[in-house]
Image (cartoon, rainbow, N blue to C red; front, top):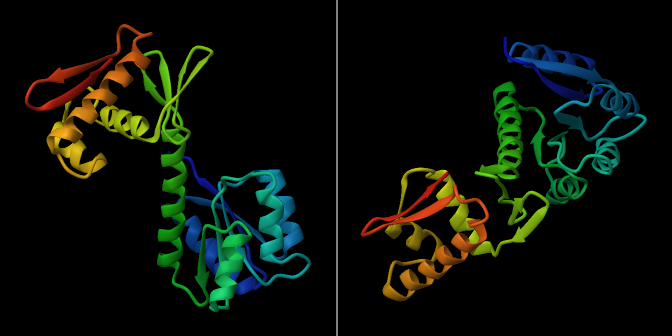
Length: 226
């Protein structure tokens, strides 16, 4: 049985809140429904949900204030605002208060569910990019850092990009033309020489683990093995 995703729904309209809660619960969510911002904050503290769906206009504590308080404790939890407003300023306010997305009322349940899953997928992807194992190395793509035991090697943006694509094709050939066009813009001679230099730099940074190797597959590209 798959683990249910914990979701906090802060919505002061009881009937709407119940409809949303019941709909989400049929889609493998465990939903905690709060009728005001203060209760929502208490529920957040107690149950540590994985995603928040917050109505903007609520009694005792509005959605923006609630999001700001939670953001001070957790900078990564996804937040969707529900709002009856659609003015540009209101949308901007939502993002400035820590929102990742917003839905204007009335909304369809299907749209809410798609947006919830989209944000959760982004969080999962980010976590995966923070810990890519390469032999005895840990590669944090987001921070452009390569960890080996207690040592940290800083990577340039292009080194991190190149290493990421190599890890994506682990034990397979990373096509030379593809990566030149992707990272350098075209596959001319000078860019090819530049890429060779970056490959050499990565080899030096990975040499602490002898099981890790970037192999030159002549005429095709490079292969990262470990």
